[in-house]
Image (cartoon, rainbow, N blue to C red; front, side, top):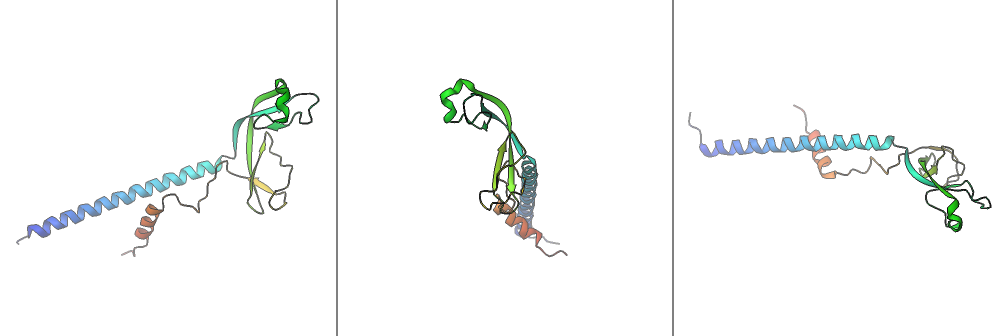
Length: 151
């Protein structure tokens, strides 16, 4: 049997190219899997530790109120502002999905500023949205590979 060296060389190059494409797709799939794991971990974080400021001035109308930074009104008596470690809790409105937060409390006292409802669920501290893929090119490749008819 006589083997044409040009055809044999082409078959080797074509096979190598397929192996490289296969490895690239596997790497893309692993990247997407890692991205999804990270996304799930970020979604589980519903509060973060921060520094909060509390006014302790006796005559201040904002006494014992918690703020993320010293309030401008209370800066005049800044010696009576206490800085402590606190927690910032994140919430999402059940009706309109508007995100808000509370400082040092898991109790939401106000209505949603968008729709006026009072029903909230815990929300992620990070803006994560699965409907917005970050790696669209690799997802498109994977979709094309997955849509091939099985033999």
